[in-house]
Image (cartoon, rainbow, N blue to C red; front, side):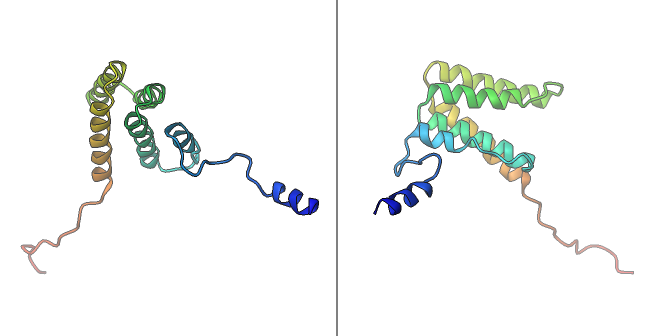
Length: 131
């Protein structure tokens, strides 16, 4: 009987995931990323972390995730500065404990990245001359 107990203990994982994860436990599950992942997937994961943190009203995680999005920007283009101003607004709103406004803003930005990544359908042009 004792040998069976020792075998079971050896097969337990290093860390336990709760059956019903809390927002903080769910947030820690997102921290494992592959280093060779596609850049678009990495930005989508960053948005997911920020959205999840905002929707769970987690002030620290929200600030951290939005800060990560801001740090990823290179502010040498007008577009990057526009993203930075949106992220700054999100941080200000979170500071005022408004979590739903930033969550909606970040979700719409994430959806825009997803739409931009989808290839445009190829449609044949009917008015080309035949040779």
